[in-house]
Length: 380
Length: 248
Image 1: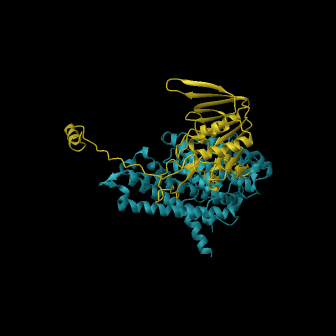
Image 2: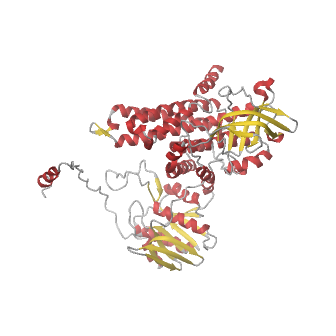
Image 3: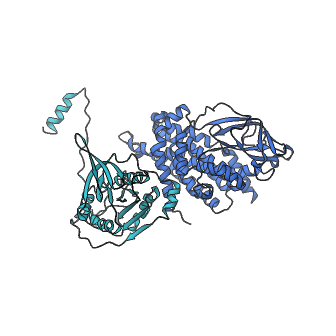
C-alpha cells in the first residue's frame, strides 16, 4: 500500500491551490453576494486543463487519473465551491458519460469541445417530482422515428444557463419504468427550451442553477447515448463518479474551514493566551483534522478503485456521505471557533458553512448514500 | 537567441526557518521547496518573450546547481514551459562556486542571454549573477524591471531613485531582474505537467571550482523586545516608562 502522491499529482494539487489562492479568492465574496457567474474563472480553468481532467488526450482531455481529480477538487473547494461544482459537473457528469458510453461521432462533436472547456455541459436528471427517487421521470422523449420529441421540466440544473450541451434523462417507455429511460444529448439552444429564473440559493450562489422546461423539443435520434432504454443505467454509473466529485468538494470545504479555524486560533487571544491553547478549541481542531483525514482516505480509496477499474459505487457513496457530514460539522465548528467574526462574511467560514449544506443534499442526499451503503452491506 | 534562466530552489517563503541543534545546517523536515520567486518571475518573462514571434528567442532553458532532490521543483519549470533543464550535481558551498558551475554550462551550451533573480529567498546573497558575468567576461545589468528582445538585441529598463534608465544591449550578457519584470508566475497547465516528463532534464557532473568563502555557522537573530501599548489617554505613563525603565 502506497500513500505517497506522485510528483505529477503534487504538481496538479499545487496548480489548483495556486489558482484558488491567487484568483478565486479575489472575487469570491462579491460573486457570492451578488450571484455572479464565474465566467472568467471557468475559461481560465479550461485553459489550464481542469474542465476535462480525466478525458483521454485523444479527445482533448488532460488524461489525468481520478486521484488528481480529487486533489484538484479539494483545493478549488477550499476557496470556492461555486466554481468547483462547475468543474465537477463538466468532468464527472458530462464528459465521463460521453467518453464511456458515447459513439465516436458524439465524442468528436461534443466531447472534444467539452473536454477543452470551450463549452460546458449540464446533467439533467432531477425533476419537480423526481429527486432522490430518480426512477420517477416524468419528462417524456417520444420516439418519432428519426427524432425524439421531448416535453417536461427539469429542476436544480447546475450550469442550466451557461451550458451549451445538456445530457438529458427522459422517459421513452413509461411502461418499462427505469428501463424505458433514455439519455439524450441536447443542444441548449434548441427551439422549445426555456429556463426558469436563476435560483436564489443559500450557498454556492455564484454557480447558475435553473429549472429547464422542454416544450416539443426535437432531439435527433443519433443524439441518444447507448442503446434504447440505457438512460437510467448511464445516470447511475455517472453518479458514482459524480458522488466522488462532490465528496472531494465537501472535503475541500471542510479542510478550507479547518485551515481558517486553525490559523485564527493561533492569532486570537483570550484569557491571556492564543485560543488554541484552550482545550475546548484544541480538541475541536483535533477532531476536525481527524474527520477530514478519514474523508480524504475514503476519497482516495474510491478514486483508486475507479482508476483500477474495480467497482467503486459503494466506496464513493461512503466518501460522499462521510465528507458531506464532515463538511457540515467542521464548518459549523469553524464558525464557533471564530465567534462573532465567524458570523460575518469577511472571514469566509460562514460561506463555507452555507456551501457545506448543499453537499449533504445534491448528487444523492446523505440518506440516499446510506441507502446505497446499507443495501450493499445486506447483500453480502 | 538562447536564454538560460538560473534557478535556486528555496524553502516556501512562508516557512518558519529552523536550524539543526549544531547550528550548522537548516532543519529541512516539513519544508516545501519552491522555485526562488525572483527566478520564477525571470522564467515567466523569458517565456513571454519566447512566445512573441519577432523576439528571436529560440530556446528557454533553466539551470539549477544542486542535488537530485531538487528535480521535482525543476519539473515545475518545465511544466510551465521551459524547453529543457540542466542540473549540475553538486551541493554548492557558496555564490562563487554556483557562478563557476553556471559559467561552464553557459559556455558549453552557447547561451546568449542569462537571466537570474536579483537574489535568492534563502541566502539573499545577490552575488551570483554579477560573479557569473565576471567569469564569462560578459557585460551584466542588475535590478532590471523590464525586458524585451528583438532578434539580436534586448531592451531593458532599470528603476533609479528618480528616473528610469533604458538600455539597449547586444547579448551575450547577464541580467538580474527585480519586481516588475513580470506580473505573476505562471500556473502550469495539466498538459504542461504531463508534458514535463518528456522534456530533457540533464544531470551534469560538476567541474572543480574553488569557493571564495567558507561557511562558519548560522545564528538566530536576537529576540526583539516586546512592544508595550500605552493608552493614549495616559501620556504620563509613557513618560514614566521612558524615564524609569528605558532610562532615557
